[in-house]
Length: 483
Image 1 (cartoon, rainbow, N blue to C red):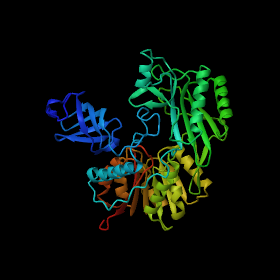
Image 2: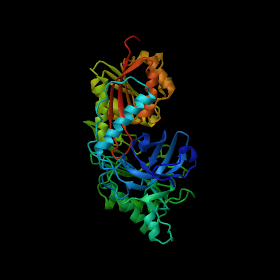
Image 3: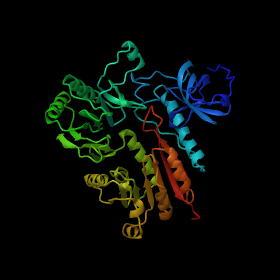
Image 4: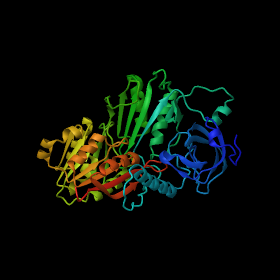
């Protein structure tokens, strides 16, 4: 162990599992890790630490200029701390910033966006707009996925109480970080409103009472695999039970029991997944009760959401995010708008009343089918949607038929845009681009490439996920006058 004065330099302690004592935590870095510095070296710290804490850190990675580790002992606590509200805090891996006041979370997220745009993008930036905090900091999600496992995770306290005799218990809850075969039984989750906890706990209690098998991911056997719940602001509730194989008798009995116990459920589906992974996008969910989908609203637009549809997970803030996007686009009713990575068409439909024409493009054909149906549901007649790769679709013939875009809206996944698409945008050279991102780091990388033709005019961070380090950011780009 090192003493509090750090008498040994880092050059002498390049091995793993070194414990540094009395480390003062000073800030947050990317991915929600806390930050400390010593002897010219940066230490990234996990373990629920807050700037102002003084901790002992056990290093797991130890490089020349930086190290990573976990807080294993707290000498003193920051005066910025608040009491976490969830009994599962620190174990389930979600909501890692519960111990931070929400105002502090927003400040760190704002700084994270600025750091990424400046350090990665190396961009000239206008004054950044203050981050838009979430209307709800609890019960804000509209979708959660829980996992069944035949191996419940036990906390250190639970293991000690069992005196070394560790039973095999089934679990329904969240995967514990870095333990792919262990699932933490969740009693109460604050991410969604009721009846989500009632639904999950009812299924678990029934399954245990009737001896239904929970999935063993190592052996790839067992019946119950996943549970996906969507709760919309319209009040509709969609439940999709994912099972390994058909067992009609038990399936009917379980779903009937659930529907009787929770009559608020409007749609119940089941999906048979015999594969080695949990993805259901290549599978076909089957409707057991209800219409097989849910309906959600953004402003007065209504969207059909199927069991495989993507939709903004925080409906309340999704509306705010789309309002910022529409405002940045500055539409007057005469513009042609191209909506890239359009998914089920939510952004394009949301801005359609202010545009002359909307052209949506998305790689996933099923999403385009949903987009077309959503447009029809909302009587949007000036939007058309196409399945395929933007790089392949947007050729001279396509532009001749649909028109050159006045505004491009792009909302890529966390990995950002492919370099070929960035080059295509430079070729298209629309007067405006509105870039919506769920990962400011990859957004900054893409903006650096677009800097050849565009300047950053506005930056607006939007917090969609309180108590996590995740942050959305909207950037308005305008074509340089001399290009």
